[in-house]
Image (cartoon, rainbow, N blue to C red; front, side, top):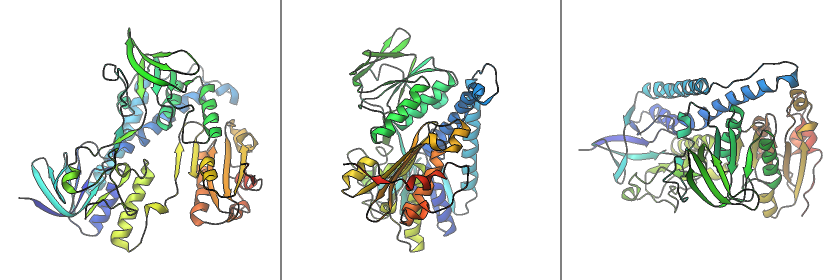
Length: 459
């Protein structure tokens, strides 16, 4: 006999806890099911642990730069076991907060186990059958393992398994030159590893503009990261106690040899074993759950939120999915995924803050574009901090005067970009922020100056 609930939430990623709190507030009897760890990727293997590791790596890097600032910290030694203990402690604190939050919900019951649909709006988990009129899926995704020759014979790390490492790889070869790969590349180089990044595409970060990708490559290369692009026909094999990545590049040796390999080549949704077909929930060819503009799936009474719906691979988009679902269900507020402006950051040092269109996308839009670009060397706060790498770039619709996109690559770029993002959401002309009086000395104060130097984008 099945147990009856008002709602069932499958997976405790970034959307689920807030949704459970709202369902609890509405007095709805809710079952929330998780088969692994509370918090999903962000809390356990993504944002929180990686940014904690990045902070440790930056602290060591800055200590080595002491002479630039007039002091000496002596010989800097990285204690990887200590770095890992700090990371584990911060992750544990985050998980415990989630446990306490969910446990304090009066109408919400937690079930640990693997949930699987056995019929429309009916779930099997650990020998129990649960049913509800409303079911919400928030199961996330995991690191993709590419079908490379030798991948099944050679040990490798993913962004998840490398979280268990408490030692320093002598030479880390990273397959994948995009966001995850580059964060780990700079991080481990600063810890003291030799690092080689291998990317199949002709450039790093294929989705970014050429000038952004080129400057990021220059930043990590200055710190000693080796970059190999145009790496076709990759294969993995052991070479004694080391691991070799064979490749065909237009430049450089045909083999990259290291002590360890990290695969950072994309994501795979955790949807294959949920019994979605039995529920009438459609997926695309990659396994992402198809949803409409309000996160509803093809099955009546079933929603999908977060990375598993293919509409955003970020914590902030997952949380926004919750906001969209809650607004439409309970507030009579017609919020939509399509209202969202693309925004994200690459958390190397200095970081890249991105909002809206790239230059390539703006050109393809057919609009008349105004553009501005300014080197971080012109920003007094950056010079004072000794952080002058990078640049700021903005794109404006010449007709409407609305901001279309921004790339802030430089000190505090991941924060500064929000002043431009907020103008995009407000749909105000760029002159609104151009005429604002910003605090000196800050990085943001140069945004009005940058906007005062806009020029038509060359064809």
